[in-house]
Amino acid sequence: MARTVITLRKDGSQSVEVLDAAGPDCLRITEGYEKRAGVVLDRRLKDSYHEEPPVVVETTVEMQR
Amino acid sequence: MSHFTRIQTQIRQREGLLQALQDLHYSYQVGVNLPVRGWTGTGEKAEVVLDTGCDYDIGFVRRSEVYEAVADWDWGIERKTSIRRKSFIEQLNYRYAYNNVLAYAREENQIVDEVVVLENGDTRFVLVERA
Image 1 (cartoon, rainbow over the protein chains, first blue to last red):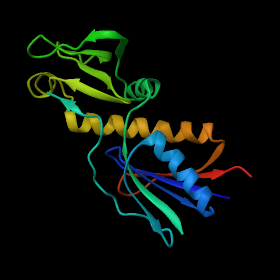
Image 2 (image 1 turned 45 degrees about the horizontal axis):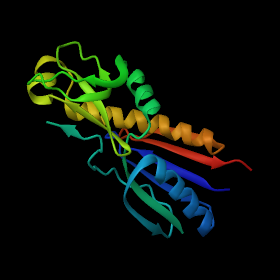
Image 3 (image 1 turned 90 degrees about the vertical axis):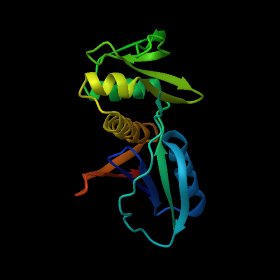
């Protein structure tokens, strides 16, 4: 069964990784989540799951003035 | 082999925005072309306007698919309230994303198998597809 690991950073950015899913399912789940979560900063294939260190990226709610 | 994606959270759904504001204990107005009071008195118009407790507002304007926060931050909000732009935006994005994960799990019929707050303050969810 596919597992989806989503990590929310304190700045509101996030990462998502789908485990235990065959290629097409993995891509379908990944893209489904990406579509509703925000803008993809980068996506890559990994050989194995490793917890990513915290990353700091700009948030998207933009400030005016 | 797995896909790994980093995502910049975007606030796209008004209901999610309102829920996040409620969770953070802000009160607000919802409407059409609500004025956002600012330094020049020529504030923008917004769909959602936050009550900051002073005569300067924080508004949320929908541009394309994304809600943006508009305010007179430097000369108004940060001088007259305890709200700080950076932390406000980060907290709002975090709360919105948190609720969004739970909504995604419900809509996709997935089990929330684990929710863990990590040592660095990040939150990790593990969702599992139902058999």
